[in-house]
Length: 68
Image (cartoon, rainbow, N blue to C red; front, side):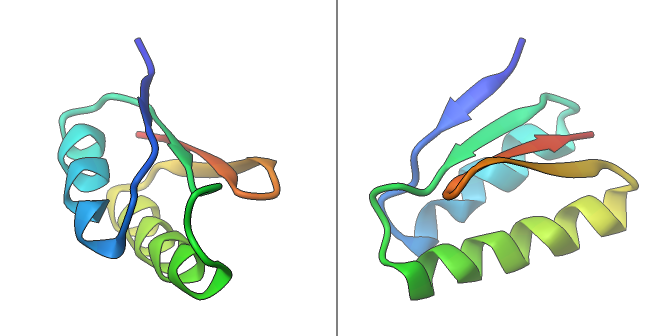
């Protein structure tokens, strides 16, 4: 199962972390966010993936797959 999330603002990064830490791959769709805010979420996701030993793949311009 892959959890697909489309955050509407940076505060919703909590859900990305929640599912990722439970071992669920997360498809993070940032198309609704301005570039500056999307970059903040990617920075968070990069740190999360690095800290947990997972993988981060860019699927499209603002679409990322986080794999635990």
